[in-house]
Amino acid sequence: MTAIILAGGKASRMHGRDKAFLKINRRHLIEIQLGLLRRYFKEIIIVTNKPDKFKHIKGVKVITDIMPYLGPLGGIYSGLLCSKGRYNFIAACDIPFLSISLIKYMKSKIDKNTDAVVPFINKRYQYLHAIYSKRCIPVLKARLKENKLRVSGLFRYISTVFLTRRQIERLFLSPWLCYNINTVRDLEIIRGKSS
Image (tube, rainbow, N blue to C red):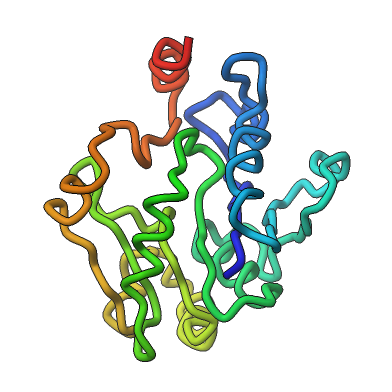
């Protein structure tokens, strides 16, 4: 399995600050994610529209969107096309508390017909903390060409395992799983939690 980090967002609610390079406890968010993901994944891909900002990071593949500026759906498509893995864990770059145990649990739910595994955490489905098969590529390409960019719109066309809140909360009790940083206030909360 390959890990793919989506780092191409505009970060408009962060006043243009690149989320991947926000600092928590003196470490960039991308460093925190990579430190965890490297323990489990041999191949890690960063999808970004600013590859020069990531060229100092060793041991990862940095790619640009094949269809640029089409949001997370475009990032998922680009990452899957460039990945060597049949299945891929895909995460947004603004999630500081990734869990290898949760990723392993998600992987255990894959069978031969599974195209995606999506967990329900923090009162919503986490489409950008999910596993996707390369079999999703044709559907993704068609959706992008039609300019239908909502990630949630993808799942009616692929075989998806949706993990319930009960399944997740029984095993993973942290309320911070999949907490993502969208605003300056979110960053302050995470810094307070991490200090």
